[in-house]
Image (cartoon, rainbow, N blue to C red; front, side, top):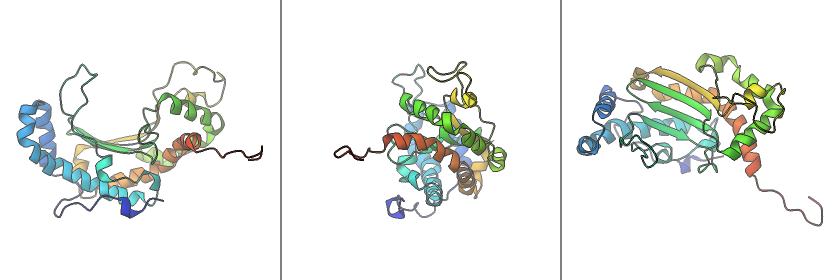
Length: 250
């Protein structure tokens, strides 16, 4: 289990784990003036209004995750996404994102992601999500093969009353046909055809301005934790070191 010693230091004095209205105004202005000439002179304002409160929120959420998602505990700076867009392979060359976001990956899956926890804040909305959203090819296959035997168990997790009250209906960006090599008539095919598995909730942007914002995220993450754990089970099992065989005995 992760320990508190691994967490980043507490937020600087005076930084609260929620946003001021000026933070959303900054993001709206950034959307209108998405260029370095506008942003660079206002970088200190961005850090005070958005970056430091985000780190404070992340730290508070992470402290709570020790109780229900200890394998996702990471320093706040590792969870926070940069405001800078990666434009190398994109036709959209605007340099900045117009939202702030955080992602808690599973320990040991930092390079390949696995299933994890996410939230972002934009001037339009707050999104809180959990699951495997862009699993690489290997992980995609691992989850699908796991669902062959565990589709009923996974379906029960998605249908829990607390999940249905908190999150929107699961969609999954499914294939139109069964993936190659999987039985077409399998009773879990609606889940196996998916290319992502998870939960998401969309809340008003004003949610981020409330003192209980971190508590709202924690509550949603706690409800989603069994789904995230289930999705990471086949991935973690595949990555676990195999025992060496000695003289033909395990």
